[in-house]
Image (cartoon, rainbow, N blue to C red; front, side, top):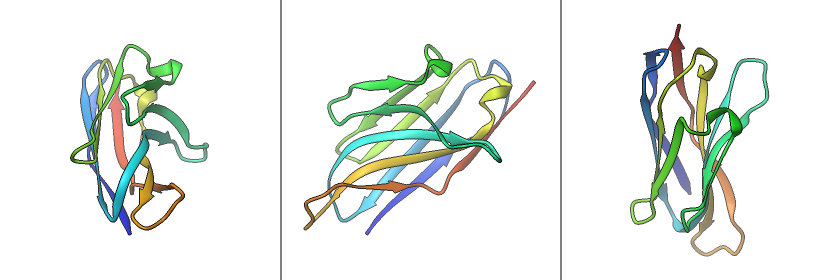
Length: 121
């Protein structure tokens, strides 16, 4: 019913910048919070940054001052701008959205397929 498609990611040197985008499509009535998570092999998925429909953001301490999230509510798109990247930011990044599907009364969290971000030292 709902698909999240991520784009961006890739390889960048330490200190560089990279941008990720995630577009939601399908039978969407509204989207509450949109978030970016990341996960390294063998580790738990962790929240990087989130943004509510009204624009309130919440960043993990490890990325404060370096990562910025934004969204376009009309297009159901969320962006993640990553600056001053460090090797420890290397992970698979996942987009997540809390979606109220048309014809339903409860929001459901949907996930993107993940995109690799690699920061070389």
